[in-house]
Image 1 (cartoon, protein in one colour):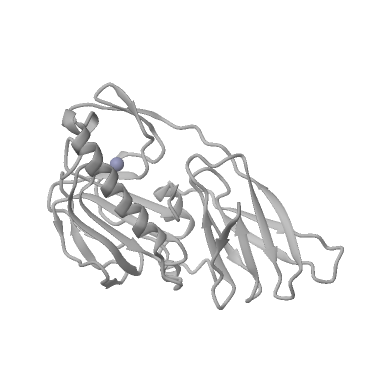
Image 2 (tube, helix red, strand yellow; image 1 turned 135 degrees about the horizontal axis):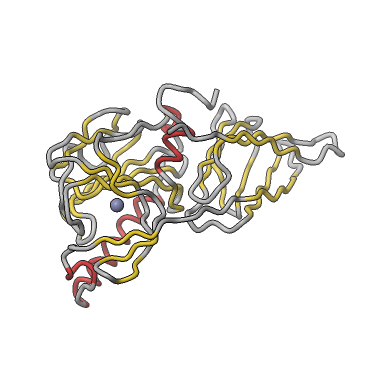
Length: 276
Ligand SMILES: [Zn+2]
């Protein structure tokens, strides 16, 4: 399916000599990714979070699955002039997805396991907050494994009959041992051999706050801190952690804001330099 890529130009105040024009491309919607170019030296924030700008003026930011209906961009020109623009964020309708047959101790864990899940969640958050000031994501993104799409981003989930958090990634079902490759260039930011929920887990930092995560793996072929190129093998599909069958759960986030991997793959595909 070819997803529509919206290109939106936001014109800032033209009343002053320092007026700044920022072109935004991508998807201004929940779970969307937005990117563009400004004059080098420009500073940018979205809802108060600093957005990295490359030496060539490129930037990227993400909109969470639960993003509110608007976001506030503040642009500070190299000469110090500041402009503010409120952008609309389109809401999305989400599926309701029922998953049964999960190990019950992963759906209603005992207090000791809850503590372990919290500690492991802390490791993931810490990895997301460390990000390289290098725009590795400029390679674009490719689907990291081939298989049947068995779960989409954002679904409201009912696990073994109990409501749980929305689905934060894309599920690709394929036999155990199916290769998984890096979706884009980056640095491996986390490797874990067996988290309660996610099993064998790999995260890759793509710079500027963007990262990808690969979970339920049967095998891991990379080490923490290792640089990877797009398409490099990083492991294999499995069914470790909270799952009822072999699949890759593939997630992308921007400083922890959960983005729709299918949106990112469509908006920033590998091999097309949309940021030129
Ligand atoms: Zn999943």
